[in-house]
Image (cartoon, rainbow, N blue to C red; front, top):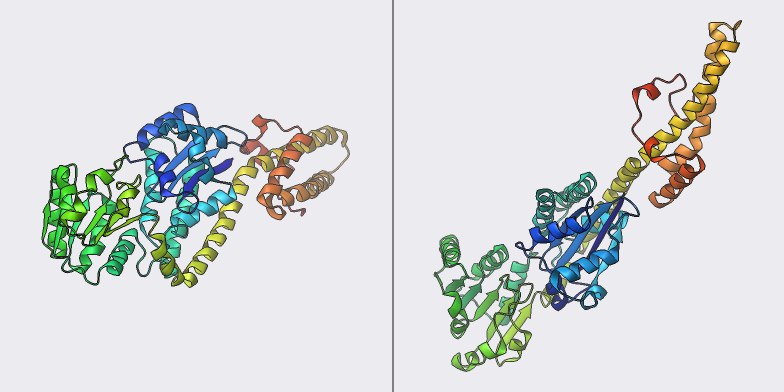
Length: 451
């Protein structure tokens, strides 16, 4: 069984590339249906966040889809030529794929190392795969193992201590632009989970007023009321078609909607700076795709930061967590070895059983031909012959079994298994679980060379 991950993240591709192949919550079910229709029988899961877009696969070795086919699918689904994003993609296979997912789930691969949101996102990716019927035992086993590793790392290290979320980093950035927040007005565009997380950190500075806007007015009202109640700040809503105008009064704006096109353009923003007397305006665009055209940041008094710009702040946080990161990486490596061994035993078990059965069949046939000829042999003699035959069989199998199950690394063991399969002509129908008849064979027993 082959495990593969294909994707990009904040290190390999800028936001302008990631946003072109990002999968929104609304698009995920359709993407899953189309992917399964094109590649039936393949186990897969999509993990799409503001910082990464990844496809995880589990399929028999040599089976489709190939890497190029997955890239072509992403391009076709989004209506984008593969050349526009392929250079930012990475691929990991088998053990490397497991290591990558363990690091992703543990937030060791996050822009903000130690943030906890990615754990919920990995869990959601698994649940979505189950809901769409694209999960399977191998993929589920990989994701469950990754979730367990992540929980272990967060429990045993200080990785999640301090400012470790996009929201907390955004609040930290606001503190660097303004000396105080209690006299500032904040405008939140969007009302999703990321928006609320970011607001929670900004409201810790007790801004003077909070405006919330969303395409669904009821959602904006509910969020404004809840945040006002929870954080003790004055909050109200703004009609979605009026929020750009309200920028003339705001000091900080945070945008986080699912729009695939910029909501704030240079033309729409042109009159705002003069109306606000060219006072400083901090715009934090945490949406992918971006909600604010980058050209808006060139206007007088505007400080525009997107999700990639937050990397500067996260580097400072990372320096404070290096010891915890090292401990987390060590836990990951231990988990990778354990997972690789489990997969190796799972994948090679049918081969080991089939090879042992093939030797046993030969031994049983020879014993059956010999016994009728031993008319004068006592029962004790016959038992000695059976024991001798058993020892010979066990010693012949000890070397191959050790190479397959103990001495070889996963890559080498697979090569050995394929060679043995070819040498002994083992067929697919022989690579099955051992039945009771084989288990009761007179020469069946331990394979460690002992009688």
